[in-house]
Amino acid sequence: MNDQELSVLFKKLLENKCSEEEAELLLTILADKSKEKQLYWLIRNQLKDTGFSNAADDINDSVKESLDLRLQQILNSDIPVSKKPTMRIISPRRLWYAAAVVILFVSIGSYFYIKDSIGYVSEIHHPGREIVAGRNKAILTLSNGQKINLDDVSAGNIATQANTIIKKSKDGVLTYNENSDEAASNQRPGLIFNTVTIPKGGQYQVILPDGSRVWLNAASSLKFPAQFSKDERVVELQGEGYFEIVSIPRPSSEPGNGKKGNLPFIVRSNHQKIEVVGTEFNVNAYPDETSVKTTLVQGSVKVCVLNGLTDKELTSNQTLHPGQQSVITGNDLVIQNGNIESATAWKNGSFQFDNEEIQVVMRKIARWYDVEIEYHGSMQGKVFTGTISKYKDVKDVLKMLQLTGSVSFTIKDRKILVS
Image (cartoon, rainbow, N blue to C red):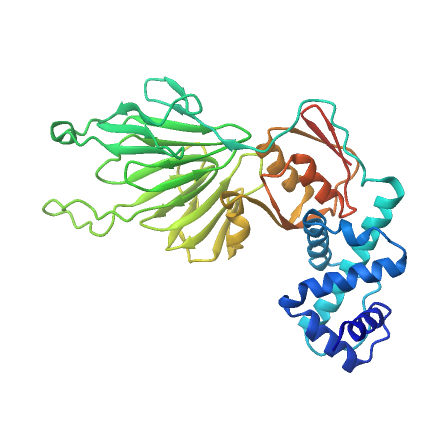
């Protein structure tokens, strides 16, 4: 099919005048990822025919990302899409794509209509200093209370704690290495604890004394011993962290001690206890969220609810398998299928919203950009699904959300007003 025939058929699809056979043929072509450029060519030409003369030069990556967020929001909504083709198409994938094409076209048309009318989409007023994305920054608190701003120290040795040398690597990772001095290594003093605290607008990676890695998100902290005990490895998390735990065999058992296998690794976080031996998982345990979520990527973990005052276990251990997520709300523990990509997006440089309420979305933005949020009007029913780079300027992120038509934003100093 040549470009002219494809353009005619595309216009018929948008006007809901395709026969079933024509729709099947066109949707088969458009569903091919290699035809993406051709699809955008069709949209550009159709927009020109509709009167949006500047469309050809203005569909950039930022607009595409915004429209994709809008598209995913609509398709994940329970509200039927209006003006969707009423043709009977047997394949659900075909029907989905038909809706996608129409919504994308209408969204782009709406974008250029607004843009041509007022020059921008609800311009964000920002008289104060620029709000930039977060970066690697953290404060290390040693057992004696000394605080070390990791931004201010150069790569190399920082301190020594419990026969462990603390270093900052050239790529900005905090590492704990056992002292190679044989005399020192043979000593194992009582546990002394260090804490790594991540402020708003920060993130950091830590390699623990056992070689396990932890990525810490903004507004989070991790408390851990500078040298783990022989019986178990225990850390305390506030906020959000991604863990890669190494398996370590238990030391040789004493006579009569039947314990075998690997040394357990335990994460305590906001009324939750997680026990693992060697695995990868994400924990979201911010105190301002309504629930604590643990998402398993690899391996196996056991999760239970703890009494916040007595540390007593309130539920039996529940085992998670890869792809599952535990959700603790109050004293209730539920196991469900998780979205690994969404749960770990922050570690990989993105915001990924999975049918999330605007308040949840804005809390993520507030932590990363270190801003305050203020709401005006009802936010009920405003949910978002989509992926946005977290290294964009905050105004770009807000404009993408704003382009969905559900919300608008105003920035005043370091406060974002949502309406």
